[in-house]
Image 1 (cartoon, rainbow, N blue to C red):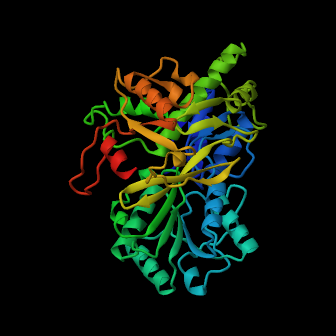
Image 2 (cartoon, rainbow, N blue to C red; image 1 turned 180 degrees about the horizontal axis):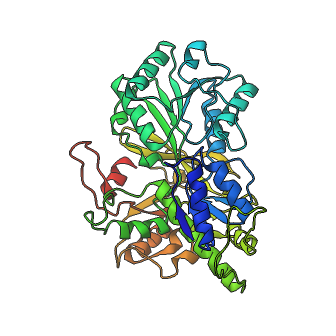
Image 3 (cartoon, rainbow, N blue to C red; image 1 turned 120 degrees about the horizontal axis):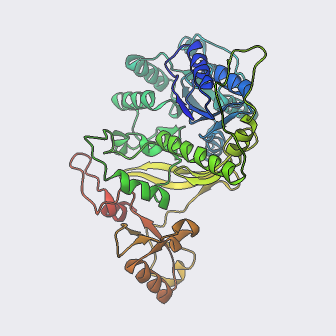
Amino acid sequence: MDRLQNSSLLFYSPLASVCSQYSRGVFAIFGLYDKRSVNTLTSFCGALHISLVTPSFPTEGEGQFTLQLRPSIRGALLSLLDHYDWSRFVFLYDTDRGECTMANTLTSYMKSWCSEVRKVTQFGYAILQAIMERAGQNGWQVSAICVESFNEAAYRRLLEDLDRRQERKYVIDLEPERLQSILEQAVSVGKHVKGYHYIIANLGFKDISLERFMHGGANVTGFQLVDFSRPIVIKLMQRWNKLDQREYPGSESPPKYTSALTYDGVLVMAEAFRSLRRQKIDISRRGNAGDCLANPAAPWNQGIDMERALKQVRIQGLTGNIQFDHYGRRVNYTMDVFELKSNGPRKIGYWNDIDKLVLVQNENVLSNDSTSMENRTVVVTTIMEGPYVMLKKNWELYEGNDQFEGYCVDLASEIAKHIGIKYKISIVPDGKYGARDPETKIWNGMVGELVYG
């Protein structure tokens, strides 16, 4: 197993890296790709029967030896657009993950913002393609604008020009750095106030800095892949919060969803090796693996066994249920839907392949009428601390409240039985009792959970 970083290299450099790893006799490659290297990497891994495990953007190709850790956001995004019943909006995107393709509805003026117009290929931009197909079916007016080469001044000009066209609804699908920049420019030109609605089309809504939007009044909606209330995430966060920030720079902030995907990639590989060992399948490699540029190609004989073991993995990771289909794409996953409120991000629902978009009712205000509690679930927010609240020794074998034990857990159970209510134990993600940020005036920890719900 080896890690391959290629996002800043030319098209031939990933090939050289793959060949170098192949000659050393690796079992699988953990790597990142971009639009310039995706075809090269997937093609050579397929020819050599070396599985590529990647947290990079999911493709629509059917490469046999590629496992995509990042779930597709396409279905969730389309469901959200249907829910909001948008018929006219702006779609902002970059080309790091796909081809720069313009929508038919763009005016000649808007076309000047992006001169590179190409056809979407099987490794092209699936989200843009899906939106334009749905736009054709439903009669949407979509202005799709590629902002790959924009600087801050260009962002401001674009937003001001769109504002003159009375555009108030945006879907923004950009990598984090570019996303943060355009959001800051939206604030600087006053586009963060009531009347504007932004849908952030990535899987890390809580990774984005939205403090300046919170009191502006604009509606901001997005998706969150990592559920910080899940026991496996809580357990990791407990270790994370104990890291020395001097030795581990960046540990003062929770890991982003891309880091969680990387973590899960290691879990997937480890589980695949365990599965092969249980089945007594020998995939050992001896001696030099050969030339990856040989003609004809000389694939690894046990590569199919390794690929099959990887695709059969089914585990719980930081990003939820991890399971792959025949083409190595994530299936049976769930992502939460969040909205930005005046006190911070708040979950408003979730999306999965089976239920599609499910929005939860706001139950902050409870009636005194006991009958109104029958179909409600009370959230018991608490902190993991023995002997009050602890994970059971084999907590992975249980679900929900049964994963916990301790004095407070027993007390909550008895109270629920006595007054006849349903309840859910929710562990505070940051593990803190609560303090007020002097700049944002927002409470964190358990106090924040109580104040903001």
